Image (cartoon, rainbow, N blue to C red):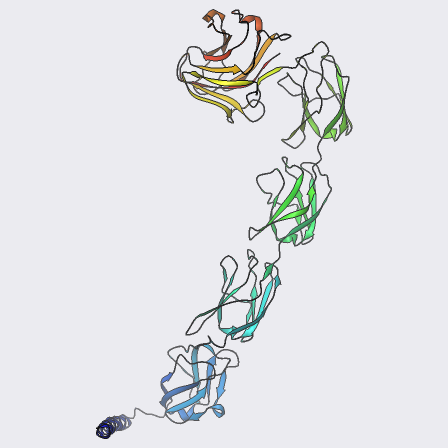
Length: 526
């Protein structure tokens, strides 16, 4: 049975060959084979380097060389394994790359209509990689079939597809500005794509700060940062400053000069590279700040000259006295170690606050300044926050009662915001401990009020204090508001004619106009 099948198969092959011969003869009769080289097919297209490649066609005996895509990838006819009119057999050279193949003939080049693709999966290899690189510099890989690499992926999916130089055994890549430390993923092309990760980690250089000069430095002055790879820094973060500095005075690999922001405080500095990776300085940057070590005379008379002794006092731009809303900016004299200032009217016992040139920061005196004839400090109800000795009880007829609102502070960063929905709505404050009225040694109440939304020139509020009995309207102290600005009111305690024995409630009441908003700051007794 098997012998019969083989006989039939042989007969079929002979029949097909006879048709092919007749057809070939017919073409020859029509002069279709005119002696020119014709390539009909080649393959296999999934061959590997070192495999035998087959070219089928006509007059292939005229082919003098086969040129593959790639450097030094030409096979001359004396290296063919076999050559005849209709067949060429040759070994694929190791330097061959994906691309078109060209047959060289005396009559001209014949280029394949399809590209040759090869399988390098089993032979591709990475031998070494540059371990320490800089953004913008070159990284070199060595290995095998690196001419087949189509992309390099750095850490955090940073892909590079264009190379500085590429050959079979070496690949040179420019390191992206935002590259980060990590292994590389090398992707080889071919009939089977291959991803290969480097065994070694590529360490990408980062800017590092090691020293500062001058240190301490003043606000708005230039500070010189010394270190390594500082030309890679894109942002500089100062301690105490939310937004980074991105504009530099000068920049090199070893020095970075930058202007000190007005809110910078002592601490470490951070440098950020294009990759957004940050490094922290090894040393602290110290900011020059004024400091008071002595005040003389103390106690001092109102209107007299006060001499402050200390360090960096030449940086002082203003002096704020307790009890006085406006800071003093004109001085009798000023040096780095001594500042002489006139004590303004209204000053009461308390600390001094120094404003700093080119800065929004302030510094307080370590000791209180005492005033001749005044033995008491003000009783603070609210100053940037409600005093711990007071509580908010609530109120009525209000939509908003915020004790830490930042929209319109008079001093500091916060004020009380009250939105009245009732013409006689109220905010209630309550002392945590027994609060006698009037408190011994105190003669007036001070507070500042800002006329906000819907406040007009006729809008009013009323202040009153009580123990258990509500005062009459005549016993309340009305205050006329000023739209769009703060007004400081000084109310003699004698104006509260209901004279409670002690204060159980401190009330700030709307007085006739609904739906207005006010801001209250700096409430104290003097």
